[in-house]
Image 1 (cartoon, rainbow over the protein chains, first blue to last red):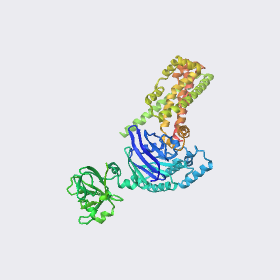
Image 2: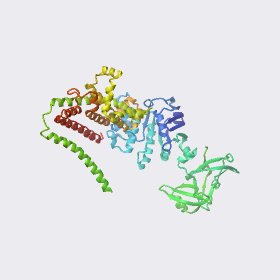
Image 3: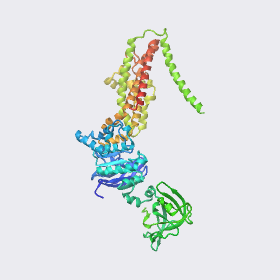
Image 4: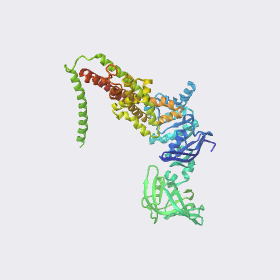
Length: 363
Length: 258
């Protein structure tokens, strides 16, 4: 990562019964950074703190190397797109875009050029005289972005910008917005609770849960290697277990009471640890099928308990033979696997997982 | 059961509207009777109408000017004893106007009150007293109405304007005031209407002196006392027409979604 454009150091903030605890985060210039977290985790509070509406009790917010923690929102030069866009209803589209320019002492020609360029980039030139009430969700979003960009901010902050957009239109707009931000070359800080949105748009992600920033890094790192159980749960990973470590010949055995997992890493003996195997990382194997050596170590025989077919994928609940649990693993795989392997509910199958895909939590 | 419910709501509504209409009809019928009607004193009527319009306008404008920052403060900020102060400002809405007028009268008998009376008055038994009494009676209502108007404006509009470079004062005038315009106008009209009809505090502080502190409500009272039913009915009709016009205008204005 290049020198951070925005850097938050040991930030603490109390808001009634809720608090942000020891937040450390950095965001490089021109980076598209997504802050991901469940509803009520403190994402909006953190964004409002960056914008200057809450003063942190301790810690610093460094922007371009300058501590802005105590600066007023109007002096921070940060563009803001709120959740419901909050376009001024008493102004038309152009009035909204020009609003921030009215307090700047630019020449009228310069302001006109800014508005023209933004309307053209965002493809909203035909809406300039339209009243806000007559705009669609997507059009409102573009006008809100144009209004935020008109002041030529150093950074743009977007608070759940797709929450008012129809589900069907979201995916196209994710790509469109990302492209738009790349074209403008601005640093973007985007908050969302939507995993797909975060994965599609973010270059780097931060995960905030219950006021604590638990992980920060490239998106693949977050999705492939969540650091804690709470992140894994938030990412909707199902197969999370606890077990006791035992030394084994070729690594460590983790005993969960109803099955054992083998890992080649040497872990401290007789220690309680948590681990997770993502639904998509468990392979379905036919009873008589030979598998690679790397899969053999963690191969389990059992039965399909339930099999759900969704439009894009299948979900399976699998129980290991003689397991006391209603089911042990949840699997997620493409629909064609059902036909290829002729799977059905109650069928005896094997499942296996590749060791590098077993996520062992540090906590 | 559904039918019974419909009968109850429609029936109660119809009965109440009928009761109100009966009041107005009774008044008009009385006015139309030959023995009641005698030539009213037009000078007295014009004086009361002019005085009421003048004092109610000044009092309601003053109330709105004071209420806007106070309502904004209570709408947007939390502070120690906020509920206590909020309740205190609500008192004029529920307190008997006569009690309020008496409190004002007693206040002007204190050393501070006497000083204020000397500096800005005289208030007691004077026209300024009418405006002051009306102000205190309506200011609680105007704060309540304006606070509701400000509460209805999403604070994100102000946040957005701040991030776009507007300081608090500019946000207030360029964002909040245009968005609250409808609420402010409605509050102004309702406050003015209430000031026009104010009697209790006015008569206690400013007295009921013919052709001096005789607003329309005072004139109604004086007319009844002197058994001048015609004048009383004329004054009541004027007050009813003004009040109805204000309420009807406010309702239509709010419904337009301007």
